[in-house]
Image (tube, rainbow, N blue to C red; front, side, top):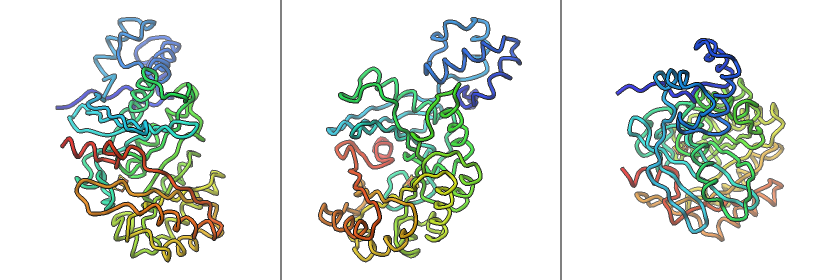
Length: 350
Ligand code: SF4
């Protein structure tokens, strides 16, 4: 079944032409923009100041929504996980992660993923399809509206941070991710600060080169998976085709371009990525670069024997890095009690 285009896949700069083509004044285009991205309207009826005739015309040509909430889970640590069904029946996950002093929205960029990382539930079914920009943006709107209806105690009304760290490799779907970034950061879109946005990548060279060429100024997290090329290829077979040195050099180039420190994400898997020799090699790789490390103990999967490293092993690994002068933080994996690993809720549903 074919669907109408999603109206929210358009970027704010395209709305003046949309209004002109419909023969409505330019200010109507700005009103529509506000309904779509500022107020997050999920029904045509809410757009009460737009003429009925234009709303009818728009709804005959475009779909306003592409996501339908299928499941919402709440963890003991207040992490919230959402499963959305798309118009073609496929499903994606989004997460709200409450942290000390701020809230983070974790968004998906693809249905499935082609990167085949061994520690990831999303990898299991391979890549199904890319998300459209509108499907990426709409995740933010649903999460915002859920937060408004049920605020996280103590977090107030602060704007959330956004990380592209859910299902999919964002740099593998660059066209849609770049369009969603335009909408997120445009003054007449969502007016979000680039400081609040982070792209998390497994580091394929072509993707990093696209990011450098576009230079959107958002933050970058690079997941490494190994301290040598061989180790990396075992844990992250597809991204591992880019050598460690090349991935680090490209990330450093982007960091230099944006003036932002690059974060290295390191998933700690017992017996595979938590060796102190690996920590020492990682420290060596990062010496002299403006990088910091986030250590993330593995979220166990339903169908895998991979185990998270012990608390002691995590601390020992961190000590090697900090002793070498590399800023290193431990990021607790939220929502262990609610199928927290990326793609796990979707997989259980399937
Ligand atoms: S960890 Fe990220 S890049 Fe790797 S398979 Fe999972 S979603 Fe894809």
